[in-house]
Length: 180
Image 1: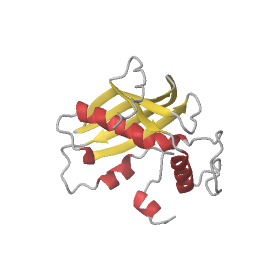
Image 2 (image 1 turned 135 degrees about the vertical axis):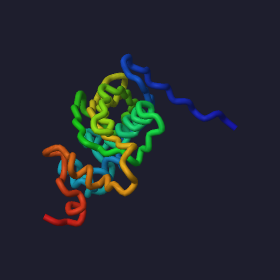
Image 3 (image 1 turned 135 degrees about the horizontal axis):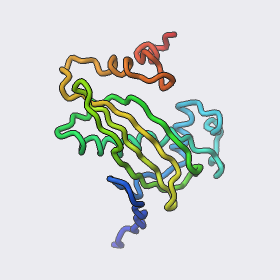
Image 4 (image 1 turned 45 degrees about the horizontal axis):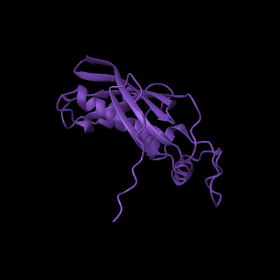
């Protein structure tokens, strides 16, 4: 029996509280599936065959692994944090270098702000995706957490009330139901 091939760990850049090296690979089918789901006009998601190497990678494809990194910091910053009590308040992506299919990514994360107002923790977290040792995508993620809210508090309604202008629908229930 042969030993599994080891992959080189990506170098940890300075300045990150958490580093997740070799955490994600941009696969062609992940790009195609995401583009199909969001109807991205820049990706030939409906065509058969292999995606061209120069196919643009939608930056929001990396939202999930970036939020995973942010959640790890939230659980460190708030003792006994209940991650189900987190509301995503805002996000901002900055493309530093284009992403390409086949790249392997590492993620750095750091807590830049943590304030408590009216019993609600508001956290701002920087997350950057690195490929080939260079930063490619930076995100600033703002999350709110209320550990003191009673279980009957409807966090979806709370999210609708704090949603920032331009970041999404003002009533997510109506939006998902297809209402105007």
